[in-house]
Image (cartoon, rainbow, N blue to C red; front, side, top):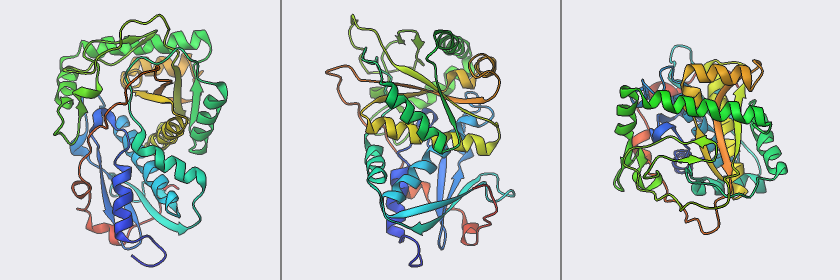
Length: 340
């Protein structure tokens, strides 16, 4: 690497941090390549979920989250990033080319990078403590900085429509044998796994938190807390974009990462919910009934406080960095004409 870019050891360390990003069923559907003065993100179609995610939306959102994690990691080390999204039309799996500009890291940069190892997808019941409106506003602002709208379902009618869509999607997917088989293939993983959803991170029984029906994973081993008198006061945010093309979905993943890391820095618990977006009729209903037909919902995020005494969740596994690197020799002279 030239002196105006980070060295390879630094890049590999940041890629390792980027792979901590959330992904649908922890499939980690990305690959990375290091060019002469750039880093490149590729989709890994072999890790697609054809039944759960037939049009690849969740895959792009997952890769977008990893891209934002990468940006955050470099920013904390004093490197601003210039991102060229979908830089090569001839290679649709080439999602981003990233180049660098030296700059001074800020306290916010360092705090967000520090949040990456602590973020978890928390499927447990949240506390009855409400999330302060000021925090919700900050989360919406972080999404806006990525070109994505974060709509809080604060109106009771919007909340009802959203939770009804979640319940309907869960019921429809539960009736689909192919969906159930695909979910089972990626769930219930043991401690030696490097991908998939660990049994230790998923409830052992079907769960409904207040008005929100959670996805049921087979072979879960996470004990649900005993019935409590307090209600779950988790907030629901819909991340949406004005267009529904591949760049918009990639940006939605970047916004998801930005919101998740800000929430983690606030010590909030989070859980992305893709079910009402994966099922076409409920996605259409959210667009019309919650977003007034002016934006496309890309993912739902549940945010709240862990109840007092809630134990920290174990980290989900990740593939070794060496396994997600390499295999793309064309990146030595990348075409950088894509969307920034």
